[in-house]
Length: 283
Image (cartoon, rainbow, N blue to C red; front, side, top):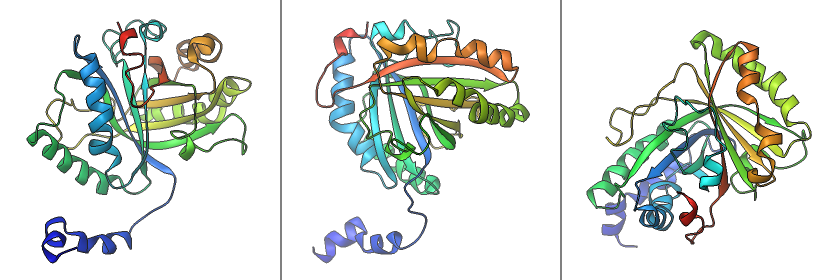
């Protein structure tokens, strides 16, 4: 490597950066991004995201160490509830969702890079504009509940383990002061009971954080930063087969606890990378 190349990429500082800061394995943070491609652009969007953006706009970045993409066919979209959602309008909006894990303690470092790289991608014409961000937020990890205790994959394995489905649940507490009580109820009472004997192996709980002020203009600022929790249910069976038994009635149970309201319960199945499978089943 010549000195010119080293200077151009500033690779001389890489060894210094690697020697400092946290480098554990736990997902301290996540990027959860649910997107609706505009009608007529489904195939173009799918190829752009898989062939370019998933890698150049996400996985190639520092401290983003795992990612997986999921899709909701029309059949799965019609299983969503509640009908009136503060997250998705209509509730069927957002047929693709991608989840990424970010190393605990590296949120600020990652955000500096992601803002910069997305500005570069926009400048270079490598951003697909025919899409709408329905629910996109960086989020901090709060808790993980395992169905089988110490057995089975950990949360840091969840995006690499071949889970057959994902259910995204968004809950709004009645106020900022109630969110802590909601989290404790979910972690200690509600989720252990719901997971027992279900198709869901683990549930991770996150809370959203504000997007930086210099974010891309097409991504709206995060709502519910003080009141919202996002739950990711990782299923060992296809949600088309087990959604009713594993995830029905979550809204009624949260309401009965008097701690908040469910704003979205949405099942997904994993995409098949490198293919256009399921694209013709979105509408």
